[in-house]
Image (cartoon, rainbow, N blue to C red; front, side):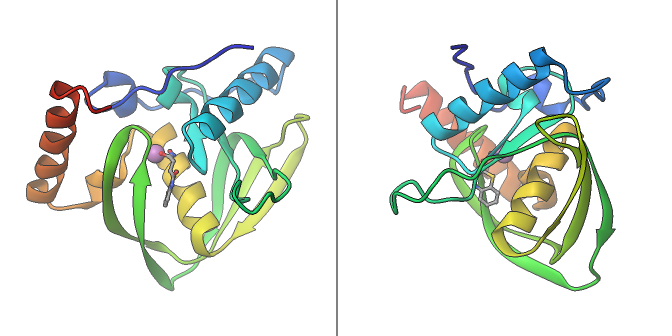
Length: 173
Ligand code: GNR
Ligand code: NI
């Protein structure tokens, strides 16, 4: 099984906008499987392809909690597009596997509807609210080269980037 390594800031791939896939081929499905594994290992609730240095529009999510011995509930998306966002907004604390151990409140549309190709290459739609809504918007942002810290003031953003740099220098990642 391919073990993907999750890259962290400041890596150029995290600032790069990804290219659509032609469809969900066997190789894209294998990529989704490998990304789910990397996400579960981390652990995290979502992962976008550029976080494993692959620049196509693929993301995976799973909000089922491991600790509760809940069944896994993976969601795989290729070429996701937001087709509706509510005017109502929602603020939540977000984190990111590519910005380890740093958290900040982010405001986003409370409800979104997303059109995408699923694991089998079939067109599908998802309406998300709550944590899932923040997560899918966070992952689609990644595919556009956007990080949650881009919504913060440059002061807060630079503080977070310095903290990650310090953790790296102390070999704490
Ligand atoms: O694990 C993650 N948790 C999370 C919490 C709130 C909003 C978004 C996320 S996604 C994140 C994993 C990650 O970095 N995905 O890109
Ligand atoms: Ni992230």
